[in-house]
Image (cartoon, rainbow, N blue to C red; front, side, top):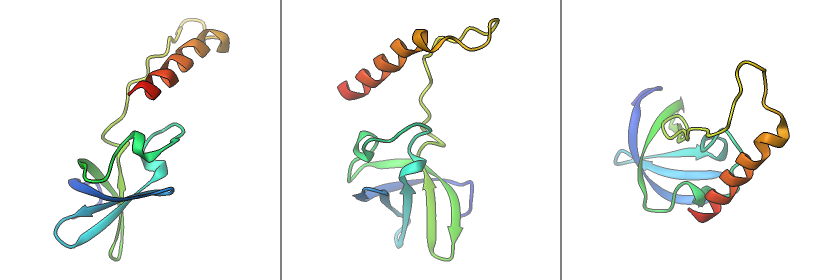
Length: 108
């Protein structure tokens, strides 16, 4: 087990700050809430549930504490309309995409 490795782990507990993961027979790691998504995470249960077995990336090992990342392997593609030749698309044009993505997340 080393930093950068991809491993499978089982979600064993979910707390407001992250999810605990059983890795290997006798190790437990933590996915901090900031390691679920680049954006705001309203609820960890939007990403995983207790009992899920998922692929994760090891991002830090300190003594017997293992920090894991979900977002490193499960990035969602952004569907925003970007106009490259004129710089940034105005906020009002992007807002409809953001609202649509937010509503889709509620439906999943």
